[in-house]
Length: 298
Image (cartoon, rainbow, N blue to C red; front, side, top):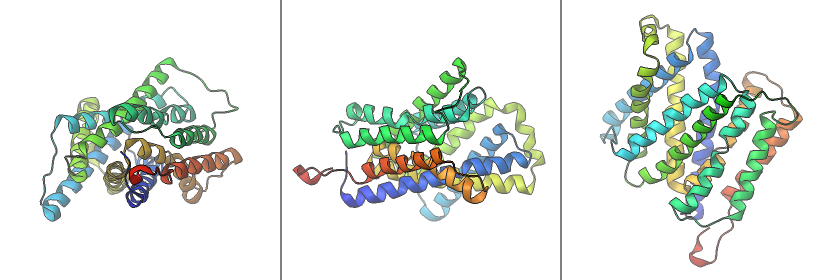
């Protein structure tokens, strides 16, 4: 269900900010790895610190409910963690560009399922935007023109990651009707810790030997990549719905390029610049939809 123009712009801004926060993840991961942490250690600390920080904030300043333990919120947490794990598994056997392109087909699936789940009206402009976004991400990821090694197992992993994130987005639109975004984010963080411990239980001894740098970088990941990223994504979905939120979130690879250019001094190629233009054009179609005369809905 689409909202008025003010909600549309505000929700779009929330999603763009969330995408920017998510885009800092590769840089922080590189710092974490250089500090001696591995993937499992980093994920566990990220979500553990997220839960501690958010739990303290809710209890001290909001005095609200810390956790939202409804079956839907729990399912949403499983989908979020599953998406991250499956994507990580996919990167072990697939080129990053190909994995990115397949993963970011989730806005298409979200848009299609939203037609049936939430009875949203078919919007041609939205699907044109989806096509532009996929083309742009393909260029950014370097998929055209290069030989990509295909792994059947890797394809399965990244498809599972894509589907998990699709259901995470769709369930989010439903849970936000009855639960506060802060409580949902805290619950998702706790769910991640609970689900990751059995996967990486053999690595838990690292906690006894944490350095200050490792603590600081994972704290930064907790704040930027979980608290702010997840919270603002949920607030954006609350304003504009899952389908538009998923489309606008395709700005994440563009922000990754820009941050790498600014912070890591990496160069930008013509295909990457062209792809970035296509992605931002797709977002304009989502942010400024054509209004219908009936009821003022867009």
